[in-house]
Image 1 (cartoon, one colour):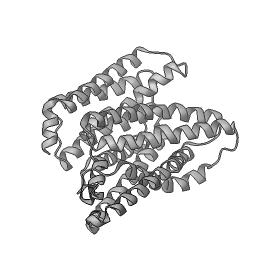
Image 2 (cartoon, one colour):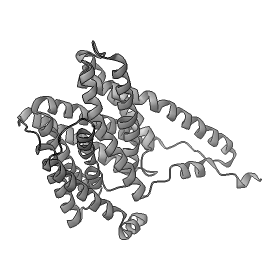
Image 3 (cartoon, rainbow, N blue to C red):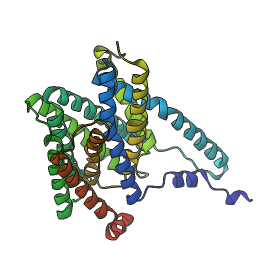
Image 4 (cartoon, rainbow, N blue to C red):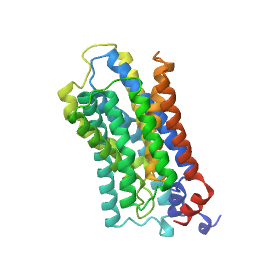
Length: 340
């Protein structure tokens, strides 16, 4: 085989970084949302089995995911270097411009900080005003902030159908979370929840914003987000108590491993991959599958009672997600996306 028929490093890299279709992006988001919904149940079991606190759990969630993803990233980097070396005679693989590197660095830092604010603000809201109110304000304000931010920074429009779907999703979230549980509204908790929603919005918009070579690499974005999150969470986790002082150690370690692997390492890679291909407002609504998944687990595995509010809220959320998913994958939208 002649040298000219060998694929260059740039060609191989371009094929590897080829963006997902909107349909596959939605599938990634659906799986991520369902996986996120299992984190609450796992965290509840950790709290029952030990005296580990929420900040320490957040640190181990980020640190454990890093332990899983860093070897994957290193292996992929080694393969990329091998491909680049084999095609070096073709002149491919020129280093990225300094400006591009700076933009990627700023994006990584912004995503990591946004993710940390999202998680830390949510836990603070739960502590201050209760789980129900914190969940409704955080996940309810998220789609609104994201829709506004996407319109101002990305030029994305919801349209009448999108506005209706977002409104239905917020109604479903409110019914689902508040329908079976009372909550106390406290200003400090509301402020923390709004701060959390802002962090979530920043993370989603940065994941959606195209770079000079297209969307950011989801694996690299996830790894750097967890690096920043682990560093930011370490001081408060040390103050809270980094290691459990009592409880079933083996069970806690297994639960922490699950939290790090499925609703963190796997879910966030899928989230960043899907968020780059789907409208930002749609991302925020699809991710409301998290409370749906949590409610299903609570009823089927944790023995909680199935209430009319659970059924109605779940139906409203799933209807909104289905409607937006249809809009994202409609032939007319696929054609417009291809032209962009």
